[in-house]
Image (tube, rainbow, N blue to C red; front, side):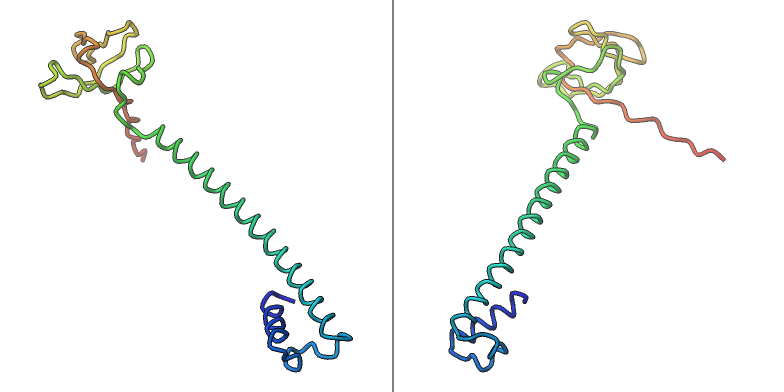
Length: 149
């Protein structure tokens, strides 16, 4: 029996319409019929609960996996990283955002973090930038892949 059959039969029992439920004559009395229906209902609902619990666990696992994947993607996505959060590895060429004065417009430049606290070397002219003007850095994107004929 499926839940719709059980529901329909129990509605017949409730209304005292045993003649239309399709189970007439299968049991010695109405009480045994109702007991059997309730047993079927319990079994069907129990099975459905197990399926619902499994589906809920599956959905929870998918959501956890999606969250972890988003965190990995966010970690790999290019973003400006404040120097107060972390610094790049020594001798790593990156984009830097620097501002000479707090009220000045900033500029973007490729630079290498030398590793000494506060030392950045501008890539094109090798001049040094102080850490007090470099506020953020970002990894350089990969070079474009050239099509080979």
